[in-house]
Amino acid sequence: MPVVVPVAEIDLSAIVRNVRRLRRAAQGGAEMLVAVKADAYGHGLVPVARELARDGVGWFGVATAHEASELRRAGVPGRVLILSPTRGADARRAVAADADHTVCTDDDVAALRAARDAVPRAPDGPLRLHLKADTGMARLGLPPAHARAVADRIDAASDLTLEGVCTHLACADDLDDATTDRQLDAFDAFLAELARDGVRPRLRHAANSAGTVAHPRAHYDLVRPGLAAFGCCPGADLNRFLSDFEPALRLTASVAFVKRIPAGTKVSYGHRWTAPRDTTIATVRIGYADGFPRGLSNRGEARLADRTVRVAGTVCMDQTLFDAGDATPQVGDRAVLLGPGGPRAEAVASLLGTIPYELLTGLGARVTRRYRLDAPA
Ligand SMILES: Cc1ncc(COP(=O)(O)O)c(C=O)c1O
Image 1 (cartoon, rainbow, N blue to C red):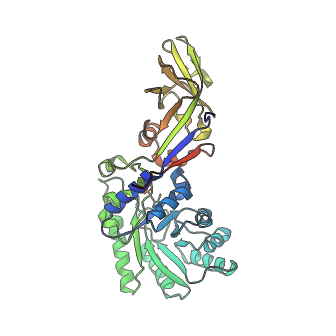
Image 2: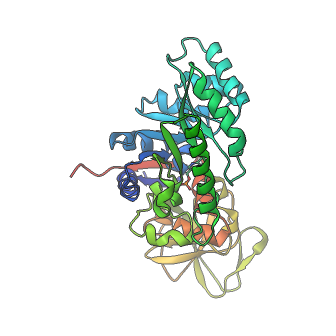
Image 3: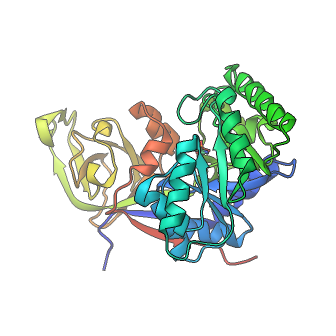
């Protein structure tokens, strides 16, 4: 029975190899946290984390308490850092999952203490906190001058451990931008002030993928790459650092209908494409509800029947038409829309004026994930 739904083939071995490359980039002995938030950037939270844990990755970064619980429920070993503060029911879920928590303010700390008091059989031991300071991203965290007092209070509390102090880089993918150095100068100054107060968190961390591959001074004690683990490049400046990384996701969908049309035929919603010659149209079972963006209308490309074919007309919710020219695709043939054997996510994202992150995390729930793992050598 041919598969008609779109399929994302995930090469778990490629992800493992990419993370080994990231380890080599962070040669100074920094611990490795892989960001697996947003369903591991669309690659599948539990299968990805399980395989990385098997290969020795000790930390996973998630966005929500729900993602932390999912990892725990699946029995994935290792530490789980929730990368932003939690409140209320989310904080209780985070505590119950024995996560490491990101905090920015005293209120964030109070929310976690209240959650611990409310969770029956909360894990023993102090809550493990990572204090985020804002050095220039202006997203989460107090400026260092204010964060310092929060750090002092956490450090002095017997029911809390200041496990980490962290910041996030805003422009690390742009090698001409001096912001990264300014941020790291501010972070270093903050760490020095903490040290003067006698506060020495076990882990200092700042580096996303770009920081890991291109900014050695951002490595500190732990690096936090995400996108590069999946073989994609966060920005054109970084291509040379990531040339041997392997895209781990290949998106395919099957041809549902094939027809020959004469020159001048208008196709799909709004008749926004007119056949410039007699041609073959292949209707492929993928649409914007699957995460194949409507912005690819008349522009996107795929590999089908051994050639590159272009989207003809408007991408529909469940189907997309491709101009196959004089090729002879058959119903059931699979078009490669993204990844090895087809267009790179970075190129498709750039066509859309977006980033590979948005494309990968936008793949819909109807896309079946299939996992591949090489046999041990
Ligand atoms: C706090 C934090 N650390 C690390 C990452 C990983 O970033 P990247 O996928 O660019 O490596 C993210 C992702 O946005 C993040 O928010």
